[in-house]
Every structure is written in structure tokens, then in C-alpha cells.
Length: 138
Image (cartoon, rainbow, N blue to C red; front, top):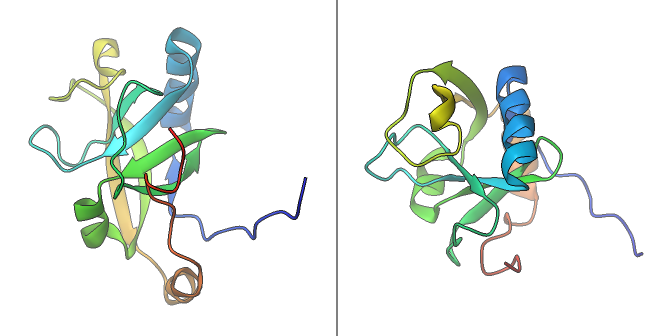
């Protein structure tokens, strides 16, 4: 099987409510993924899609995996702004303006952020670059 890759500094997590919604959406739709683009619709709201139904760009950055094996992607442009932050995906009441899977449930995912600590930033800087859409097979 080969050696295990060194664990990366965590960059994203889900609140318990968001994690439960991801589990629910996975039961309904199969494996899902997140993508944070910063487009016109709910720029602070990561979109949740059935895995494979959203094409990740070659420059998109894989911040990590949440709720087990759910990938969390971010567009390269957004990553340039958010690279020094730790992100928490929360679940709040109300419909967002996008096509995310949770919208029909009357809730939406929302990003909350904090700056990385000096220790976290030191670790992140020493790690290899995060994988991109060019590195991860679709």
C-alpha cells in the first residue's frame, strides 16, 4: 500500500449541524462535494453538489475533505484571498441564491473564517502546495 502521506494542517471543517446535513444529502444523492467560487450567488456560501456533476477546474484548490470523504474545493481566485484562513462551514436557516443541494431543505451552508494562528501558518507554509484540479483525477 505504500507509506501514508503526512497529515496536513486542517484548513476546513464542518459544524455538527452542517455535518449532519452532509450525511443526509449523501443518503439522498450519493457522494457529494463542496465548491467555493465567490461567484455572483451567495459568495460566502459554499455550494454542495452531487460528486461528479460539477466540473472542478484545473486551478481549483482542494482544501481538504470533510464529513469523511467529502472534498471541499475552492476556486484559485478565492483561494488567493482565503489562503491565510481556517474555514468553518456552518448551516443556517434560509434559502441561498445558488443551486446547492441543501436549498430545498430551507437551509444553506455558510462560511465562517478566522485567520490561521502563527503556528498553523508556519506549518502550512512548510507543507507542499495543496492539490489542484489538475492533480486530482475526476
